[in-house]
Image 1 (spheres, protein in one colour):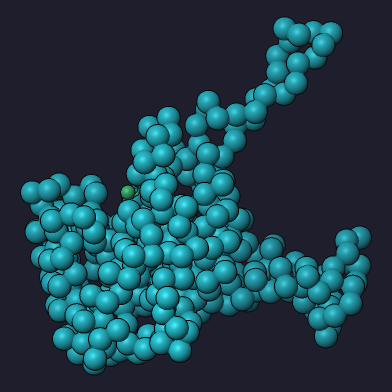
Image 2: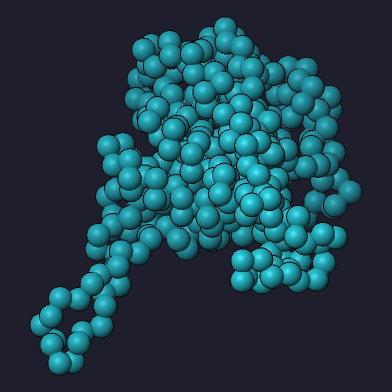
Length: 354
Ligand code: GLV
Ligand code: MG
């Protein structure tokens, strides 16, 4: 066990001091690109400012023969691009792969000052985070970096889910968790072959009518990911870090994608992955409170005065606790308005007097 007093000490001489709080930077969409794909890479500079996070993917979906080209491509893009308000993340290869050591040593040395977050796939337990934590400190010291690179774990193994709290608390670098529904389904031996989203077989059926046992009975599809996302939200909130939905593979089904993203938003996630530009628009819309929600939240804040006691508003009881719920929305709106002029205009136009 590491004593509390050592938790925020650098893990290597000369490494930057760890952060004591993870900044709440908007990250509604984490847009994945393959840096070995020249066509995709060429589009990256134009996407700056249109998406909260651009992520150079080195892991799954990049062919084994292209791993080195992807790593080199990411270095080149990062060196040549001014990312302005957009965060740059990467997903490195798995810790048991032959590529990960070169991923880390190359990326930290070459573009460590540009990288905000490193996403680590297939995290099984705190020991995986400890390994990355120490190695990053050594590499940061060597590269002379002034701020620590943060770490994000993908939850995509049964053991990772079982160890979720210790993963979130394993290092002050821990920024958040994403759901990895494809690998997680395989690891758990779930019987869905979809990448994220629901399944028509996972349902609850309306009771039979005893007088008409053959009559139609409605079915209600359930969310396969509800349990895992709920666990992620609690573990992240407990540790002051951020939960995200992951990939939604059916790019054409924008309706189901939006539903799945919205469920995650309502449960407490701050963002999601985007695998196609059209998912950025969905995520930006879903992971921001609507003008109506902000109007309601501001009315509650105004009606609650010093924030204690209870009031009736539109026939509904509001009190200290519902004020806190509203403050979650108001604070999120302020963070988003600071980087998104369109949203700022929408929120600024809200009046609460009527
Ligand atoms: C993502 O990496 C997944 O496995 O779903
Ligand atoms: Mg995966």
